[in-house]
Image (spheres, rainbow, N blue to C red):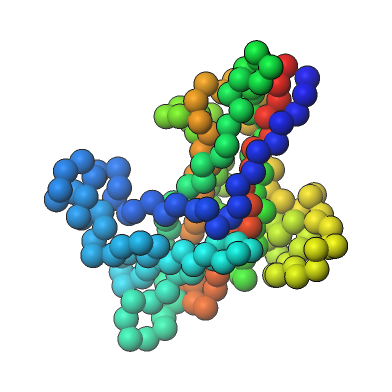
Length: 199
């Protein structure tokens, strides 16, 4: 048994539009975008979420669309496409663990509420109540680390057991980000990865 790990950087996030599952023609596509484009999603109730990309991470912010800065709540999905070793040395790879390095400014206000892993259109992992910690799963490196000699603490990342599912297509990781009365709060995704086993 050999191990193959594949990661993508946090700034490679794709935001899912609210109502995207109904987008099948012109009207339903326009309704999913609801006047918002790019990296901003309308959460309803005068709340929006934005994905701002940096070299070190993708930062997600939930904010008030109105003239005030009131606390806002809502949830939205983002997705990560993982480079997938389907066949390695004539053997089919198996997904073993999903890993996420992230940090929240206030984990009670803005956090990851669900983690799903997909093999093509087949869901192979679901966790709709992932554990949270007071300072997030920041890999032991909070904020920006401008010193290349800083070593991460890999015990401080989210790890979900996929239970060695054989892989047939490409693997994607979907994260549900949830805000609860968030104001001036942000969540940063640094990296998302999958550990594969090759029998």
